[in-house]
Image (cartoon, rainbow, N blue to C red; front, top):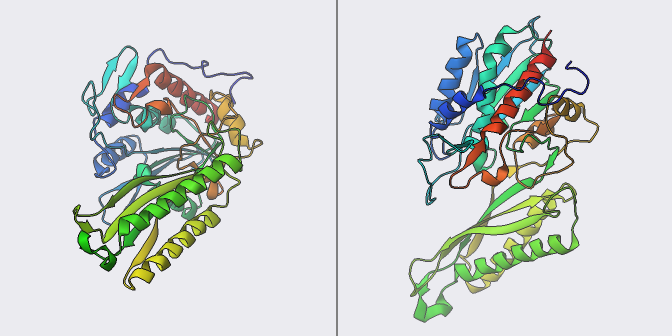
Length: 399
């Protein structure tokens, strides 16, 4: 255990050892629509150089992979211990105006610029820089590295990654998801549910509107309904004042339909999401949206029996709500994480780990305000703090 009152400054390095690995990871374009295998292969080779054999869990077509690796305790134990988790994918740079090349890391004024610098390759870089010490230091407990794919499109890969941890009976006592929190210890975030709805109307010439069913007009009814639900949450709650936005939000963010101005549109699709505080019944909310879609479908069919509405869940990630008395909160704070009672509105994979019975917090370098933005950056100081945090973890776990 570190000395009483230890802080993040205890083993603060003079140079951020995680910087080199962070830049190497950033040079690999792992936009979610593309493969992450070049990055996974690089990490796997690094682990093997230090005697750690990773497990790769691929997607159905083998173009992407999660990576799970266990550095065992000195006595060979692989159960228990601490998970260090991060996602390998990044969001697109399409249409963004960057001052420098997004996938060419650049340091300016104490900041590391480039896609993925903040979200969240700085954390993974610091973890990989710590692997040589972790693999050669006798440990009282194992350390598990868990890297996922497709977090940015709905926490897709982490489902099988967490499943692999459970199936192998690893039973970690704590998990740290290194999303950017400015090294604050975050114990809660909202759940995320994304729904896709397609309206199938009937095409007709715009001069013969009574013979068509306008899919866009009916889709607009659902758009208004979603906004009404959102307004209800905003005015009536339930509320959780630990969030900067203390209520459940819902918003339609994508819509597509129609082929020409003189044609009654036969198709219209929209995608919307809601991010719920813990007191909201997610399943009941989804059913309310489905019920409204059924009501609209019945109205469409009164115009034409072939009209229909299809509803599907595009992505879903559970919220995180770690109890105040969980040991993981005290542990991560003592290692150098900044104590906080805040919860965050953005989603992470942490809820999946917690749902598997692994006490979890979110704590990592960088500010979420920089994530997904042009000229994304992480302060070099944040990488230093993460390096020091992981050095303290090594001291804590040393036999």
